[in-house]
Image 1 (tube, one colour):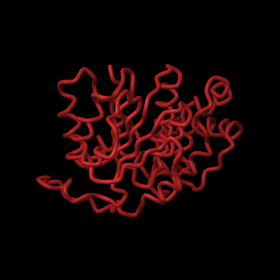
Image 2 (image 1 turned 45 degrees about the vertical axis):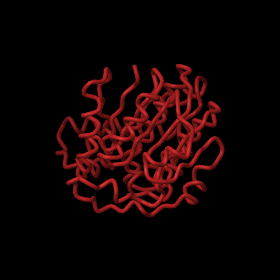
Image 3 (image 1 turned 120 degrees about the vertical axis):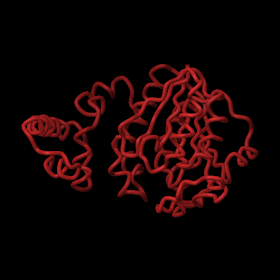
Length: 272
């Protein structure tokens, strides 16, 4: 199976790769006894071998300390967007690790996401909000891109269509407890809610430079010390204006942007 992955990634199968394969297969065998999760297809089997030790070899130890992470959540992570999200389990694990860190450090506060699409990451954020009895604010048109975000932007519209969702379908997946749905064009949609303060976690996945800039200007000052700001598509090369907006915003901030090796090249900062 690992040979298939190396071919997929264009990696030559040399002696070093043989050692990597042997190690991963050994780790996979151990994981199979520890984790009650059955990958759905061959590609997902490849990715599951790269899961963090915290959720595999040390899963039982983790469960005695914290118990937010659940393999059953993968079904909602991939719901309605399987082909993409089954191949991006690194981001799923990354979000869980950030939430674990906040829980460990006792950093609580409201949560926000801009760019909800089908609600796959919003489900985890809302789950976190319910656990700490805070509110999760979800901002989106729930109808795809708004043409106003392309005004003055030379970036060619990516062929993927994000209109295949709706507010009702997201609510069915994510639920409504401790969750506030804010539908409309951002940042105008902020008029629908009270001022947010003391945010512990913000996830921005809006692809384009204009909404990214507006989101950073609003959410960053309202993020509490130690809070996580996770930004999608920073190094994917599909959305260059998103990276430009992030780099421009943080060039005079004390935090450094840290790239994350998930499928679509997220990046992250913690508020100092």
